[in-house]
Image: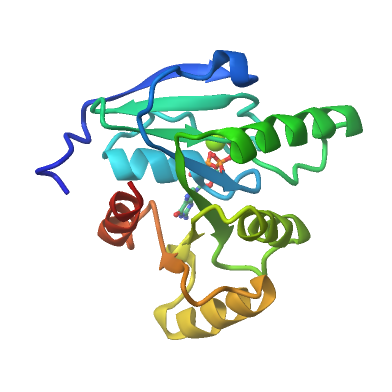
Length: 197
Ligand SMILES: Nc1nc2c(ncn2[C@@H]2O[C@H](COP(=O)(O)OP(=O)(O)OP(=O)(O)O)[C@@H](O)[C@H]2O)c(=O)[nH]1
Ligand SMILES: [Mg+2]
């Protein structure tokens, strides 16, 4: 991995609300999707070995645009605003849905979506919908279960089975147990991402 990519050579390239603002080249992109506060920005920071490149917050619903991160001019991460934040109005939610759908359905650069779910809990209705959406459009998906540091190892199997069952998980997809606190799943995440490029 490190031979192929200098992961420290990473920066926020641009933020986009719609197609007309997307980067115009053919670099491969990996998008990060998940409910608000699940740990998408933390995942990016952890993979890049950076403290705060992607903005993280304990305040959910903060990321409102598609943020494109350039990684060593070889690939991009696209941080997608989180869903399921209760205090968002109906019209904002609709706008959000349109923005995400436009990106996921029509972006030729997209190689795979990292779909993040909270390892502690059963997936939400939105998590299930996102997974079904990705399967429907045949977009390759890597499920990453975050905050594993909060679950004792003896319970990992139980949590993994519960999440897979609720998602109606396709066995050919990858499921990675992850923590941005202790970096569990870091190498596995990079391996899976690079495999999709
Ligand atoms: N214990 C633990 N906390 C985490 C982990 N990942 C993220 N967090 C915390 O969860 C909160 C939300 O993390 P973010 O990375 O900002 O989540 P996000 O999905 O980007 O949130 P939005 O941008 O609002 O959609 C922060 O307080 C993080 O420190 C993890 O693996 N373990
Ligand atoms: Mg974020």
